[in-house]
Image (cartoon, rainbow, N blue to C red):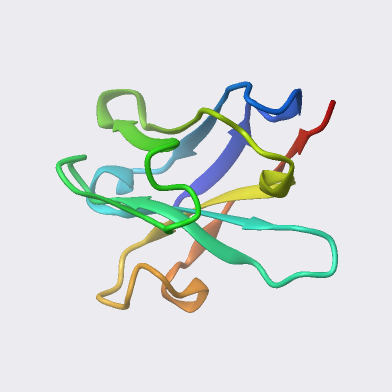
Length: 124
């Protein structure tokens, strides 16, 4: 298990950029997939992106492909989500999560550790 803390959210205009950080404490972060999910008011929490344990493979929902980039620095126990060309429909609370199981990266149930979330608001 790891403890995750997100940061970097805020208010940004459409077309702007933000970089979210996910800082982990715990010995096994470097062996976990890291997923990013988001939840808008009244909506289900949905998959956004994921990165494998060593950062060599990334996965994205079609809605963010080409605009968002997931990276990680295992030496610093931190994962990142760079978000460019932001749209109002990207407004949500964003969560990072760690997956140690063999379950699918797209399912919330595959992740055993979650951060507290950070608010991203895209508005003019």
